[in-house]
Amino acid sequence: MPHQDSLSALLPTAAEQAEQDARQTVLAAPLLAAFTSRLRAAVPVLALWAHGSLAHGDYRHGRSDLDLIAVLPDVPDDRLREEIAALHGQLIAEDPDAGKLHCSYPARAGLADPAAAHFTFAQGEPMDRPVTVVSRRELLDGGLLLAGEAPEALLPPVADEALRAHLRADLRDYWYPVTARPEPWQRDIWVDHGPVTAARAGIALRTGRLVTKREAIAELPSLGAPSALVADIAARRYGVPPTLTAEQRTERAEQARLFTRAAIEKALARES
Image (cartoon, rainbow, N blue to C red):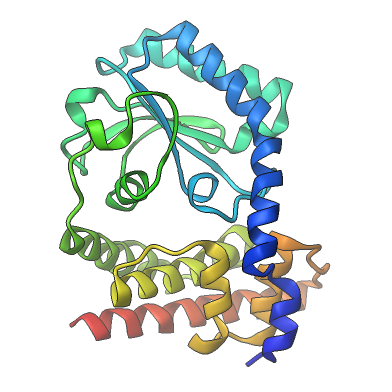
């Protein structure tokens, strides 16, 4: 377990985070303004919201995703889907940071069903996926209004038990099976997301509160995460990550996989 002082040196304090959040939000403002303007010129938008770290803190420009929801009057047809995808592509060509701008495009009538899949542009490509219960809860608990109507005017409430059920299912049906496969954990994205997702879900299941990634990273040592793994995750988000040898990457992959698996087992056992 890492010494708390060493982890504190990697993580910003609450005051530092607030100051950094303000600076980072300013950095994101031109991209958000360009996207909002172009999107509203291309399609009637009833509402445009941000959730995730931009809305709730701990956003890091160029490292964090920009998680957006654009509510449309109707389900976009194939032509409009192509136009929206082209808009994203143009922004990415002009500004590489736009590759982290992910947006779902639900029709107003489809907002009532959390399981319904909606046209989305994310990770550089079009897809269909739901606006999850977690995203809905983030929006209702303080989503950032960029245009149009507020989240509470269009989204139905999210009950605590619905949130808990979603978190349990996500850990059990998606993340836990991935921990049985060694290959994905060689990649930074899985090392960063797996342990932090398990920690965030565990906290939410215990307390009913959705926390930032910073809060979850700070919790990792008390959950038994290896010191080197915690330092690696924190450095990649807040500082300069070390260069790893192939052997070190393999060791880190196994640490991340086994820790995530154990954390999920504990979280689900507590709920049973």
